[in-house]
Amino acid sequence: MNTKDNLAKAFIYTLLMALVYVLSIYLPRMHYALALIIGAALFVTIILNPLVGLIAIALTSEYTNIEKAISLPAGLSTDLFLGLAVFSGFILEKVRRRSTTLQKSPYDMPMAYIILFLSIGILAGSNSGYNQFTDNLQILSFLKIISLVSIYYITYNILDSKRKIRIVFNSILIGTAAVGGISILLYMMNIQNPIPNIEVFTGDPSGLKRLQGFSEDPNNFATFFAYLIPYPIIMLLYKKKRVEKIYYNLLAVIFLTSTILTFSRSEWIAALTSLVVAYILICK
Image (cartoon, rainbow, N blue to C red; front, top):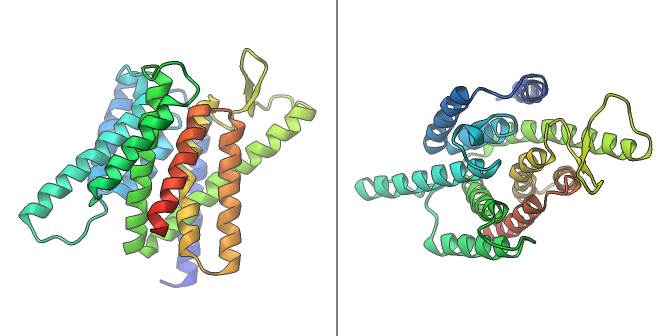
């Protein structure tokens, strides 16, 4: 595939990213029934093709009503959904490997890593600033870490075997970095001189300004970036050239800054903890 073809694909993927954000701004919340159908389709997609499924769930979780459709606390169902899909794929792959002579799979995760992830999730969840681990936000922190770290492990293995997929990730990273960069800029401008008719942040009862981006909720915005933070880190470690390292470092900084400015504590814990684990996995 020549350079022109690669650039054309990158351009198309970036346009699709932009379209998703436009739809998330102007379309109302999806109907519960439609959300359930989308959720079921994504669940199957993650099992059959984890790369496509994880990209899709990251995009749709920004503005769908899946959590309300299955009557779970806001934000909790996305992580539970991902965790179940990853676990199901892991079990199915184990069953398949017993009956056939398959090569190593992205789901072939050593039990030691699973125990490590569970331990980190419990520790982070029990020390996330809330009084009881039974609190919904405590459980959310725990599930988010488990699902994110599982995603990073799978992504790492997929990238290791399919280097061509980088063009997809690059396009997604460019598109989301642009949204995050614009949101950060508008956020800083609004602090000094509020811009009429532009809502890029929201305030809680204490008066704290939180980066909202183009989402209706700063927590949703934080979740979206938390899913994408490890991708530039993983790809940074694959790249050798100085220019490429600067590029991926810049993307990582934008994503982390966007997450931090949302002031979503559970997202901070999940993102930073899973980043450490991602480094351990890649540098082992």
